[in-house]
Length: 444
Image 1: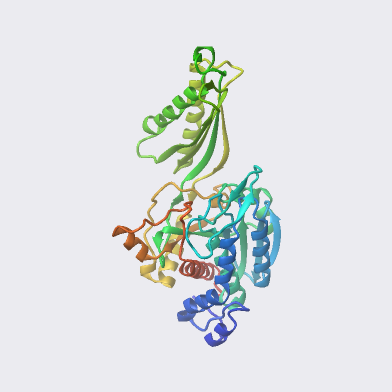
Image 2: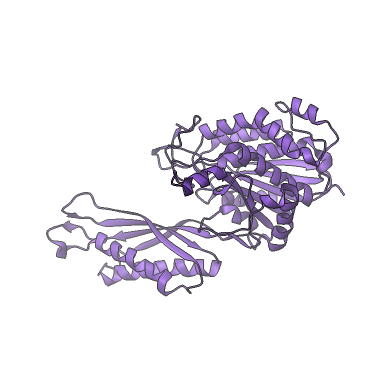
């Protein structure tokens, strides 16, 4: 595989702060990308980390990403699917390859202790003000995308084809990818031959990448259950219908779906994350609200879970005498399908990662939870776009060693304590993306 243009490493390092790195031979790729990080990308990462924005409200982040891609020589369109940005880098005949990076932060107050910790706040779509933090590493993703764009634009004799850079909003709401597809992403910019993305992973050591040759992430659905009631005095419960009691029985009964309805070898999760009702000790309220997250590893189980949740919730309401005009209401407010890697593409690119990054850099994939990703909308079965999603380690091995010896645990994603090592995460993600593109879009 031809990766690099004919130019001296010295010239590349001298120009690192103003231009994309150009590299002399295969052995210099890591050094060139590291130099670009030190000379350019490090400050960009700190900027993104200190200035996170909530889902579908990433206006400043989107504007900065559009400016960075244009500076790299990419043709940019803004406002796709809301705040989404699409960049097209054309380089002759060859495949169209989609590279995606999500850009939204989370309503979490940062307590990482980092010198560049976020103190940002933002008014959300609900009109409430929230602290905002990059508590899932999306700042790594967008910084790496800029690094990838800079390298590809500066090394056009190393690849041939077109790269579509998709800067996606609202991954945390699992709605941004769907919004971009609905806004005509593939109709307007072309249906890609391949779609690629990565996620920095706090649970993996730095220097490691990992990807499945099948399922990469579970499905996720946000389910809202509104339980009506008939208000009454707390001393006279017989004169009303208590929604707290009814909702409590729903919470308990929902666990029977996983334990007694889903086949035991099928992974499934139903978690009630919020239960809100009432205002005072001695008042039976007239409403209770439940918020659920529902996870599955195949679309059949996903549909089974959602059907059973509605059946049980509505049925329990009826069993407690709620009148027909006051039924329990179940709504799926957000959702994303299972994210499956294309087996053939994943096998090919896993081999590329081992070859280009080193055998020791690749970790066998193991699903350690039921996290979800809306990247699935770019590669649904109906769209027939082969997809490859991989993980890049974000935590130094020393932190894992310290935790095993009684030190502080490694913070999880979405934690106020979340932090990753930016340089090894950004540079490895960039190297991996470049390796994938130059393999899929060779010059020969």
